[in-house]
Amino acid sequence: MERHFDDELNALKHKLLKMADTAQEMIGLAIKALVDRKELLTQEVVALEGKVNRMEVEIEEDVMRLMALRQPAARDLRLLTAILKINNDLERVADQAVNISEIAADLLKQAPLKPLIDIPKMAALAQKMIKNSLDAFVRHDPILAKDVCEDDDEVDKINDQIFRELLTYMIEDPKNITRAVDLILVSRNIERIADHATNISEDVVFIEEGKNIKHHIQDSS
Image 1: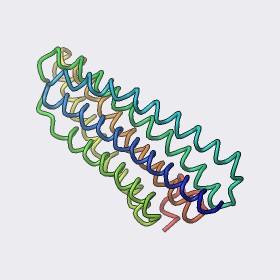
Image 2: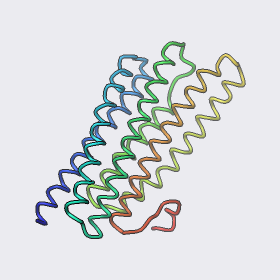
Image 3: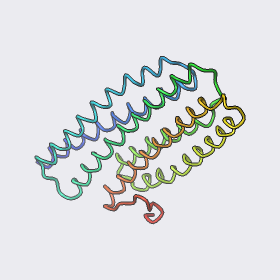
């Protein structure tokens, strides 16, 4: 019985990683669509959203079934609860990618406001955080998870820098306002992706150490 339960947990983790890979692909496509000005890529992002949504429902149903049928002990119950939360965070990451692709589609109808340097840099860091948070989950590594939480500060700094720079464009010429606001919204969506990576990492610490580090990561090291 125990071996069968472990097999089911491993299958559940595998599904979660596939969902994470798809969400990561969506982020990459959305940013590439914006930077390379390729509208076709925005359509690919939207097409992948349905796949992520189906995965979310399937994973949630699997977790509920395991909870009902297996009546897991404390640590396994923490794991299943965290998987539910990670599942939700990954679905939200996919939503942010769709948001970015929709904004990109609007921006592609207009002339570029400026070369995009910080936004791709910020997106790459957020994607790294997603990857590391899932690596921490698979490897049962709370130290790596806490490192991801620390990386969120860097994303916030870049987000603030982008906002200040785009604000100057709006002040200099009101004609820049619409495009600048759209880019600010892209930056905000990337910042939220990083927040979801942080949430996942906090869940990993909860699984491995049984403590909630939300809002006080500095106290957990």
